[in-house]
Image (tube, rainbow, N blue to C red; front, side, top):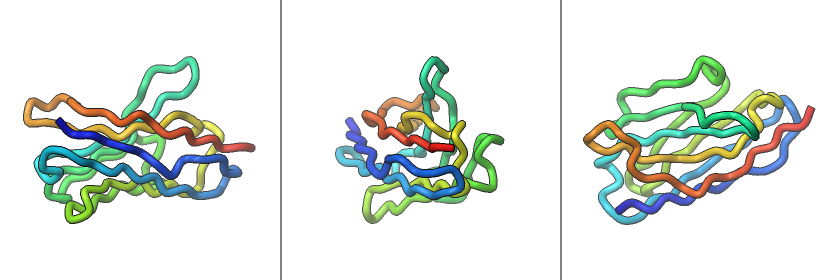
Length: 118
């Protein structure tokens, strides 16, 4: 089992920045690729970013590319999402998730709300 707890969400004006954190406990953190997802009201959950176990491979959704940066600190069992130039359409609950060897995201946090006002 891996327990994930997100923090850092809040209310910010358009153009502002937030940094989300996701702290992990349980099984060896470095064994998992980590992803960020988000779900806006009335919409399906969507992929935001992913970072590999060894930091070497990173993917972003086109909608956040150039504005968001995913990073991880395996020594601190934490993954981050730096969000800059925020837009109202970034408003959503943001979740971190751990991807196991099967390729499935097996573990999820409870989510943190991000609200961007125009």
